[in-house]
Amino acid sequence: MKEQINLFLTAVMFYSRIPVPRSLPFSNERLNRATRYLPLIGWLIGGIGAAVFYGLNLLLPLELAVFLSMMATVFATGAFHEDGFADFCDGFGGGYTREKIFTIMKDSRIGTYGTVGILGMLGTKFLALQSFPAALIPLTLIAGHAFSRLMPVVIIFTSWYSREDELSKTKPIGKKGKNSDLILAIIFAMVPMALLPWQFMAVVLPAALLVTYVFKKYIERKIGGYTGDCLGALQQIIELLFYLCLLAVL
Image (cartoon, rainbow, N blue to C red; front, side):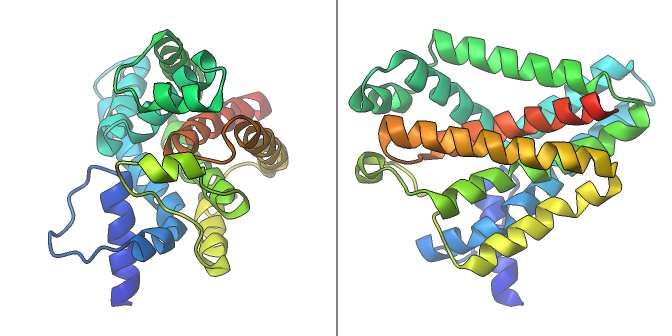
C-alpha cells in the first residue's frame, strides 16, 4: 500500500503543481508505473475545477464561474498540458521535417500556431462548458479530465518514445509499464462516466479511440513516435472532444 501511495504522489508531483512531501522517493521506474494514476489525477484536477465552479456559481454569473473554474484547472497543473498543446501546434504547424519539428517544439517561445491553437482550444472548451446545465458542469469537469488523460496512456502503451527527443530531453517522462497499469488507468477513467448517459458512452468511446488512432499514426509518420508535448496535446484534444460529444448527445 505504501508503494501505491508513493506512485500516486509521484503522479501528483509530475502531472500537477500540487505539493507533495520532499522525502518522496523518485525513479524513472516509479514514474513509468505512476501512469496508472494519470486518470486519477484527472479526478483531482477536475475536482478542483468543479469545486471552484460550484462555489463561484452561487455568487457570480455562470459564464464567469465556468471561466474561473477552467483557470483553476490550468493553475493546478501549471498549464502542463496546455503548454504541450501549444508546442505541438507550433512544431507540427511550422516544421516540415522531423528535425525542424523537434527544434521548434524545444523553443520556449510560443509562435503563431501555438497562440492560435491554445486560444481556439480554451475558447471552444469555454463555449462548450457554459452551454451545459449548471448542475451537470461539476461532473462533466471531473469525468472529462479523467477520461482525457486515459488516451495519452493508450499512446504510451501502443507507440514508442521518439528517439531523437529521448537523446535531448531535459526532463523525464512516463513510459510503458506493466499491463496492469493500463488496466487500472482504464478503470479510473471510466468510473466517473458511469454517472453520465449511456448514449454518451456509445458516442465518445469510439470517437476518442478513432481520434487517438489517427493522432498516433500522424505523429509516428512525422517524428517516429510520441513526445511529452504530443501527449499533452492529445489530452487537450480528447478533453474538448469529450465536452463536444456530451453536448451533442444532450
